[in-house]
Image (cartoon, rainbow, N blue to C red; front, top):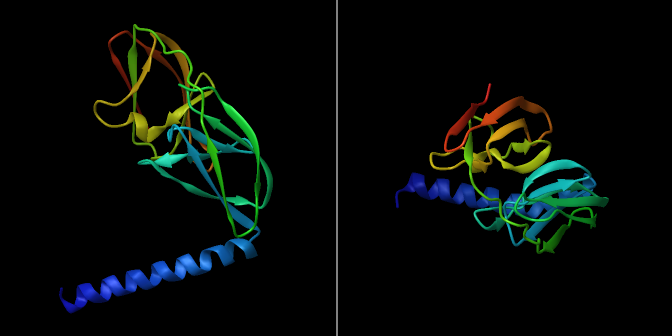
Length: 183
C-alpha cells in the first residue's frame, strides 16, 4: 500500500473515531437522542409525531434517526402490513431501539398496472390516495414499480423534510407502466 493511501485510510479512521466519540455528547447537549426501529419489514415507514423520518431499514440494517428527547408517538406504516402505533421515550444522547413485528394484510388480487417513479430523492415518501406506500427508491429502477389495480389515484411525493415534491392525479391501466418523473 503506498504512503498516500495509507494516510487517507488513517485520516478516515481518525474521523470515524472522533464522530463515534463526540456524536452522543453532541446529541445530549442538543437535547436529542437516537431512534432505531427493528421491524420484520425494513420497508416500514417510520413516522414520529406525524412526521416521516424514512424507512426502518436499508439493506436489512436498521437506520438510526435523530429525535428530540422526550415522549413521542411512533407509527410504522407499510402497505402490506397493518399499521403499528406506540409511544416511545427518547433520552438525550442515547439510542432507543424499538423492535416490532407487523401483522400482514390480505394480498391484493390482479389485474395490475405498474407505477414507476424516477428522479426523486432516494427516501422521499410516496403516498397513493393519502396512504403511505413506501419511499421513491423502491419504485425507481427498471423492473421495479408499485403494482396497483387499474383506476385513478391521487399521487403525492414528499421529501424527508416534509415538503411536497409532487402532487397529481394518475391513471393506472392494466398491464401498463405509468411513469412519473420528478419536476
